[in-house]
Structures are given as C-alpha cells and as structure tokens.
Length: 142
View (cartoon, rainbow, N blue to C red):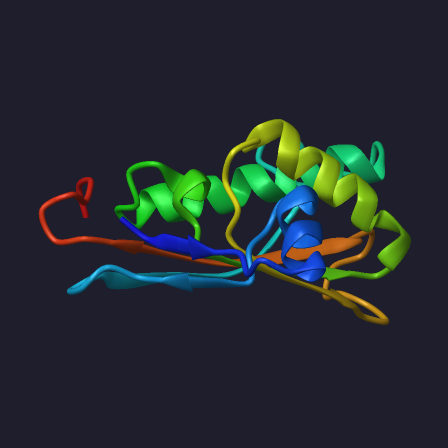
C-alpha cells in the first residue's frame, strides 16, 4: 500500500485540509498505471459536459476512475497517488477540490493544479491526468 506523507508544518496542514499530500512512497514492485489527460466527456451525449462547471468536473473524475479501472487498478481513482488538474479558469479550483473531497473524503494523493489558456475540445474547462499503481497479486483483470 502507498504511504502518503504530510510534513508537520503549516503547509502540510493546509495540504491535508485541502485534500492532497506533499509526497507519496510507493510499495516495492509496484507497477505504474498512467492515464492520459481525461476530459469531462459524456458517453450518452457523445460530447463534453457543458451543463455547469461542476457537472463537467464530476464527469472528468468519473472518466479518470473508468480509465484506471480498465487498466487494472481495482479501486480506480480512490487509489490514485498523483493527480494533475488543468483548468482554463483557476477560479474553478475550489469546485474541483469540493467535488474531490465529496467523492474521496479520506484519500490524499499528491496534487498539482495548473491554469492553462485553452484545452483541446470546444467547451472543455478541465482535463485531468492521473497516476496510480498496482502491486503484483492485487490487480484486477488486465
């Protein structure tokens, strides 16, 4: 199992409160699973979710979860140890973090949020890249 690190500092306390960690130590023999940047795409609509920023953020996290599970990470996003969030408006970060804490209240992966001028699809306001790991013998079907 991964070990998540929070230094005993004010910054460490802030990271913990906001839903992420300073560092992570992976277990020996862990295999990395890296998901590409994933959008807030809706299969039924066959397009980017545009109802609200919150709805697109939820869809984006859901797509990250599906990708990791498809790659053999049994617990999906709940097991991610690294998250990179790309946003066209960093004012959406509080919503991103609120959704994260609602979906995964006790999980604190390492985290980086980035403001970007544009993303690749019309209407796209967020894209997330995640990384997780599987320990041999604990993976789902590959």
